[in-house]
Image 1 (tube, rainbow, N blue to C red):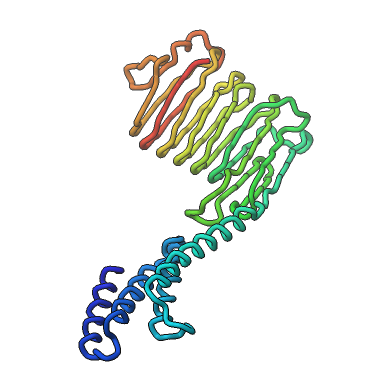
Image 2: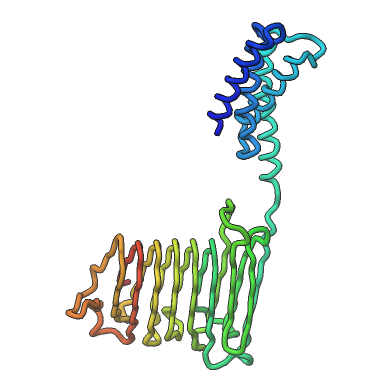
Length: 313
C-alpha cells in the first residue's frame, strides 16, 4: 500500500512540476517530495505505535509547514537536518513517557477464597474447572472442611466466576479479550480433604496444572487441554479412570510405586517416554509395577501434536 502511494505521489510531483514551473522549482520541489515521503511513512503510526513512525510524521509536518512559509523564517538545509533529529528525539521521549506511565498502572489483583464445610458436603463432590492462562494446583490437605480454594486473579484481564450446586463446584476463569499481552498468569489452588470423595473435570487453555491426587479419594478425572503443560499424579487410595484429550500440550504422568498404570493412547504424539511400560498385544501399555500395586489407574489419552511422558517415583 505504501509503495502504491509513493508511486502516485511521484507521478503527481512530476505533473505539478511541469505545469506549475514558477511555483514548484528547485529546493521547493525537493522539499515537497520528502515531506510527502515522511508523511506517508509516518501515517503508519496510527496503525502501529512506533517511535520511528511518529518521528517521521512529526518531521513530515515540519517540512510541509515550511514549504508553505508558515514558520516566521525560512529554514535552510542544516536547520531542517537538526529538526529531523529533534523530531525523532521528541518521538522517543513521548514513547518513553507513555510506556513508563503505563507500566506504573497497578493491576487489580483480587484474592478470592472459598471453603466448603463438611456439614453441607454431599457424598461425592464434583469439581469443574474452565481456565485460560492460569497456574492451577490441586493437592490434598489435612483441613477441617471438605475443600478450600484460593484464587489470585487480575480483574482487568480475567472474568472469574464461581458456581456451587448441590453436588458440584464450578470455577471459570476466562480471558476477557483475545490476543492480549498478559503480564502474569492467574493462580488457582484447591486444597482437598483426604477423607472426602471427589471427581474432577477441567478444560484448560494455555495453562500449567499440577494435579496431585496421590492422597485423594478420586475415581473419575476428565481433562481437555490445549497448549498447556499438565503434571498428574494418580490416587493411591482408589482405582481411578482418567480421560485426557490433549492438543499441542505436554502431559507428564508421575506414577507412585504403589499405583499400577494401564494406558491406552490414540492419536498423534511428538514425543513419548514409556520407559517403564510394557506394551500388550492389544496396543495398550501396562506399568512394570502392575503386579505389586495396591491400586490401578486406567488412563485413556486422545492426543494431537502432544508430548507424553511417564515416570515412576
